[in-house]
Amino acid sequence: MDPLWDRTYLQRQIDKSRELAHAALHPDVKAIYLSYVQHYETLLTTLSKRGAQPAQV
Image (cartoon, rainbow, N blue to C red; front, side):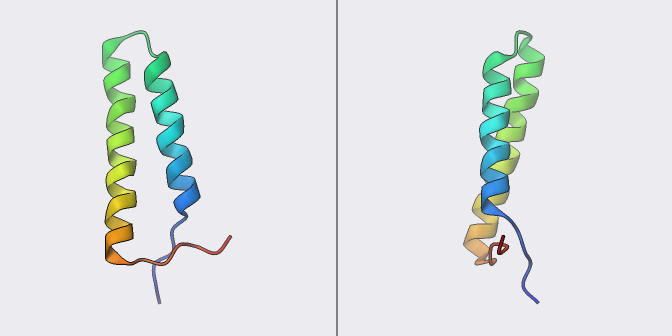
């Protein structure tokens, strides 16, 4: 059974976290949201390289 994941969901999370980081006033809050961006980008890249099949939505 292939693992299922949704590329669109991960990309939305990346975009949302970038927007929140841009809007953040406190540097610590901005750093947190940028770490979310890095996390989701790493997850998306890793799943793509492993050849995991995206979920059929």
